[in-house]
Length: 285
Image 1 (tube, helix red, strand yellow):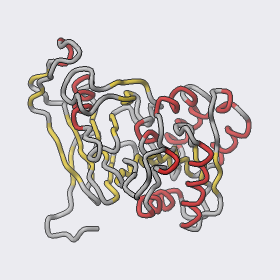
Image 2: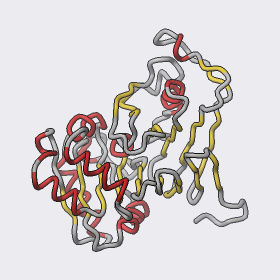
Image 3: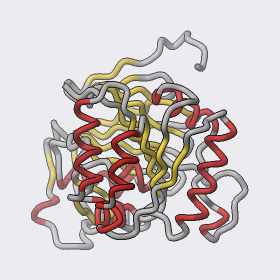
Image 4: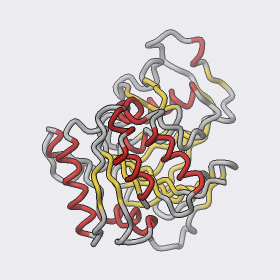
């Protein structure tokens, strides 16, 4: 059984930021970030931020240091990995071995798999996630998408439901049973995750809105946190799926695709594909 905890987060740009990346830092709302800190053991936890996905890692690192500090955290380190060699240094290995929580920033998820995949840092992350109770791996936007094995690496939302709208690569394989997409509602990514599920119908597709995340315990029990929605795509009972025979650019047909719209406090169980939602009369948590 998996002993660690994953916290994929959908990102958040709805804070009046400008268009250039330095002003839209995928800053995590205190509500989401406080969950990360709590799961890691509290404000004295050793937290390591990895801004590899970002094109401005130093600025992103400072931003997270400030964000965690506002919650009272006093043991926050930035691990700046820009090459595979960086992920093999004694300092990098030591930081990951001692961390209670590792936080991946947003940016380009392909950088995470390129520079961290199949390195000592990656191997330690996988081992500790599997065996260390209380160990947390969190990630926003690109950092969330890279947690999977079949990773969405890009694709056009405007070409939704046409074959070729999604680009797939290999991720860190922390949770191979799912495919994650982020900024899901805000960027209209319904079509590209549908194609991803059509490609891999045995996997569960999860679209996370901004300021929304999942706390995944034991690699199975997913609890929705934050102010938005988590959209679950279950293709296990597709009765028609023509993805394999179509030419790129051709509209797709999928029937009997099961979709759940979940909100704060709802649960989804990956192994049984079952849901547990709050009673209708329950107040918003």
